[in-house]
Length: 239
Image (cartoon, rainbow, N blue to C red; front, side, top):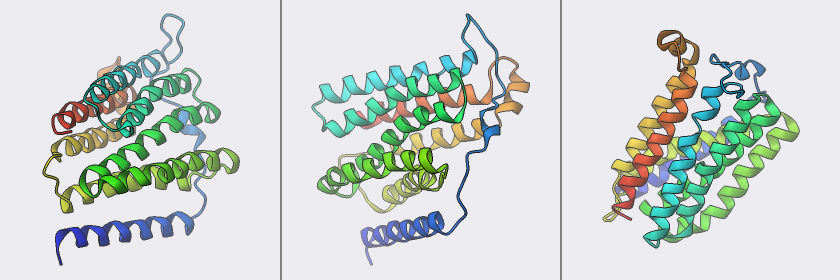
């Protein structure tokens, strides 16, 4: 059995397991304690200043990506990804200005656009150009519906699926599908940055206590944006 067939089996097995876990577990309700971030300092009249202002790198990276990939004549799927990244800056800043569940929706919506378009790009670059483009619309619909489902039911299960299946699926694609024109290094660096960012998010308070000024959640924003920038720089060279 060749590597591509093994990769396909693993992707479909992971998908089946993820769907089964999504619909065979209890509803996931947003923990209101999630909104209690360690750094709540107000500077220049801006509440939660560092968590708000640290979203600026997302906007800058998004604009950088749009400029670079459009200039290179790349498919508009890349523009959509970087538009999602830029919108994360506004959605996340809005949420951190007043962190409650209703504003969190505007943080997660552009993130979902970015996640789904990145997954489509990885399929396009490593499995099939046509398949990646064809899957973009249904993936976007699923992503946006996961946010709407959470809004109207309070259940985060589908959103959890949308966020974590691509993160688990992309490494399988990188390992079992090879590309003569696209380098895997960009993706591995992005995945590494995402993992480090999640660690900093988890240890938000502890990191804030050690550093004193900047919290783990603030650093999460910077590290995640840096990962996207690195992906854009490395991936553009092979696009």
